[in-house]
Length: 297
Image (cartoon, rainbow, N blue to C red; front, side, top):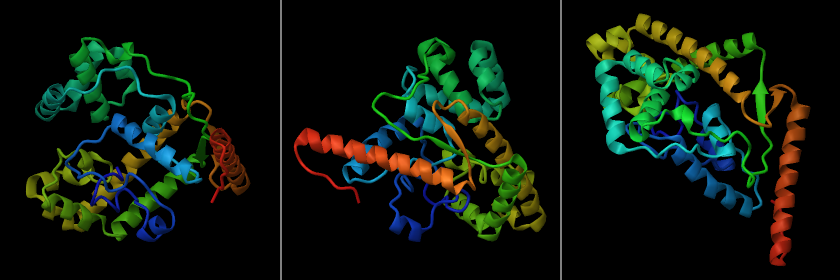
């Protein structure tokens, strides 16, 4: 969600000072009203990897979205590309019929995919139905690669924390988001014309504002009520904890992942040294192939 402009506090974007010292990519490249999907992510990342490696730098792909990371590592599934007309039809049905109705339909036409998709995950419910409507085949029939691509040599690290500590940190982070101006940020986005149907505004930390009963009845001004803010903060924290739990489960399906305690500095340094060594060997091989010399910054 950091691809979306104006969604800074709720997505915990890196500060400008950090970006100036350590280049970040694929941040602020979309408006909240624009869609963004995993195929677009993979297509954008692949040339960036080559460019970063060519500079003798170590590309670090960081995030909490395990689905995107796994797809980059293993490759895109064989499912057909999205059809704009079908996508718009599913989107309109989602608005008019509701998420529960479309999820029930997915359970009928593709029970295997439905069993793997959270009933609250509008994007993946819609995508699975798009595939079925476009191809006439359930998404579960299309093979999803399960091994890391042969053209990649990654060091894959998942940071782990005890569950109670993780949840306490999530609660604290959400509280700080409100202290840092999340209410004002959401208000600006809505006043700029980004409503509940905007892809970016479906994110945790934003959707809870737009679906609150008081906001639905009275408009975005209702979020100025401290009682409403307290309720929304509680919902964001709850939904973030649930999301974190799902992501931990998904990360365990990533091939070759090593789990490291987030406080285990020694193991993290070891993983970083291994990654740097791989870049050095990659650059060495490229230099030998071309008959030139190389250096690593």
